[in-house]
Image (cartoon, rainbow, N blue to C red; front, side, top):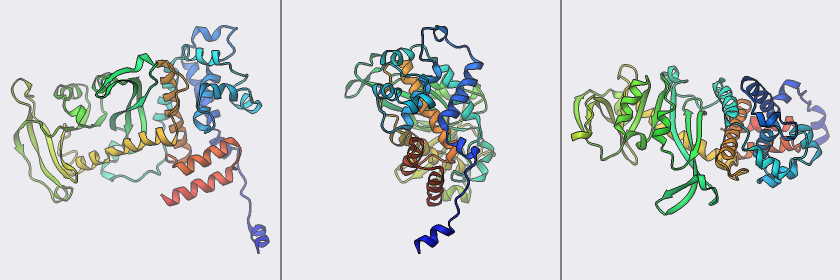
Length: 394
């Protein structure tokens, strides 16, 4: 019986195009080459005595993210002595000294250009379909948020004060496309860098920012966003003081979305009073009331849709969890501020490459299968079947 099954099973031919889709490091190297041609290579890499170039160093960093065995700089340098790694990743064995020194001369701007190119490309449409009324905002709707990574105590540049005492940490400031569920803007700094200050340096006209209470407590930021031509949907703290200027009637859809108020208010009291009214939407949730402010007119977005947008903000938290736990960006292969930034940018580029090829962020099981394929233990057929089954399950 088993023999009959094997006789009737036809083996699918694998095209070169399909195979190249999963040569993620090769694709990264091609994009890296184009980005380097568009910029200026650091003078130190033109020194004939230097054997480790930008491409080899950055490819090794990306290789470390895809390979579950390697979790340290020493491990990467040891892997560089393997024949297959030299054929596919780096051209020669890499010493600890060369790898450590490279982080000081590779420019983070190079990876930023690669990241921006990938982020600008249309990704797969296999994500959960959002309300079609939000489709005009597909490229504009961005969650602004940050996440912390613990740093080593000896990473003095990352030292910051915490409520439990001093510790070292770094912060990823992210712009996250809410409808396509992908990162589109990023900056790595020490944890003590203010998120609002970083946002002020990244404002772009036409973008629609969705932020939590940290952004909503700075009323001066609202005016800056408006002057920059940006839209916003920010949450106020519960103790926020305001004066109601106009209350608008709620639709049936608004009431079904647990909206209890939609109108114009003047925020603050005394010298903290903001003269220009803003739109306030109050939403009752399971964990209490949400106070949402926006400069979007009711004719453009109803209170119901604003509530839906803010409730979808949690997707960025899932991305942070995936980046740290499933992609595995938890072991630092460098300790300088620039070296850490390079590693985080490589992780974001890896996330976009995986999104572009698999159509969604891979689950833990799918990520294991991708790594088995890249290590040579799984065939492309087996990888395709595993990803197809994962898609059906979701």
